[in-house]
Image (cartoon, rainbow over all chains, first blue to last red; front, side, top):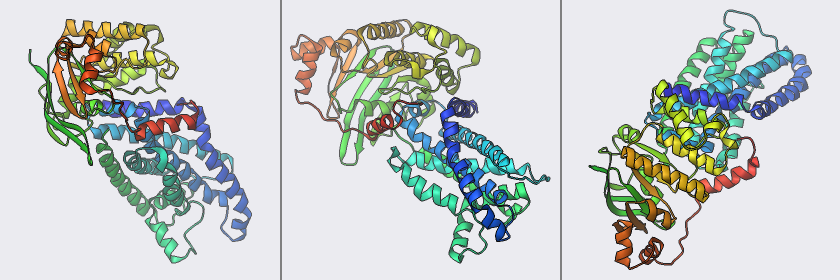
Length: 248
Length: 268
């Protein structure tokens, strides 16, 4: 247990100590928020959708968490290259403790980043509806973070170097983001895209977060919570399995 | 005195390539054992298998009486290691790196803090322990890694080219301490090096490995006698020939280059 704790603390320390990283990874969500949020606001309202920022903000928060969490898993590659991974692999603790510590630390960092983006969204005009389910927003943020820390860990454990990194961003992370209902709703999409959205784990995370904040769910609270919880458990398992197979 | 490391008929194949080819050797407890060989001879591959991070293709290994493929925890508790490449977290301070290690190895808090202080003093980093490792020179990092490897009081110390890139002062300092440790506490030392004078000076026993096979094992004195050479370096060349070895850059090396280009020695 102590190993999980200290490896988690390590990642939090590294995060807090790197203002460049904190500010750097805010750039993309802010860009999307401003460009899409203000760009489509009038059109969205004219189409009868209401306030677009309210719709978009949970998607942008999820995006910040998604990118940071996947990156925390990919960091295994950096640790492999810069040596620290070896130090943990020869330690007399189970691989499971090591990988849990890493994923938990990565998830907390991603969530912290999500909270910063949340605050920025509030400043940009995101109106949260106070309700008994509002605290669930934090739960959904944490589950999204863990889920994608798990996915990042799978790839971080499989890849030997950073050559494959753009591949993951462009063919996994970006499509997961765009087809999650983060920036547009599933209503009125072609059938095959609606089906794609249904298969995307992030869809349930975004919908859960949006529902907790605004009270409007597409799939329903229970479905979202169940889907995200189950998928997170599965991905943590798969991530741990791949990590335990690492050899130097 | 028992045997600390027993290797029998050990093989590691990477596809068609045979990195370690049916080697057998033993390292008695308390000796300083030099594992010598040209680049790509199989030294690091052997150390990886001894230290549980790489599974052998076949053969058997005993480290401190335990099998690294099955009793990993017992083996891991037995040894401390200084890797060929750095393995510190640059974003943490020396103290934090040491503390993290102590916690991973289950060293109780009071003892951990006491030992950390003693060890960082011993390697001459006492007044720099609160500094980030990224501000350290190569030599300081090495010294810190030696201190870290000893924190949990291991029975065996693995050193994979521990003195590479260090000035003579630092080399002598490190070896002086390791020899003392071996004498006082009976710690077994298993090291690799390309500096034959160093091996000659500190090792009680050496094994020479080439093309994945052990070509000689004895004391440095006997080796020189047998090959009728004046120095261990000449004996080494007599045993392994003059051909210069090629070692393929692995993914790690390529990545390090890319990492450097990318971050320009930046924040990490």
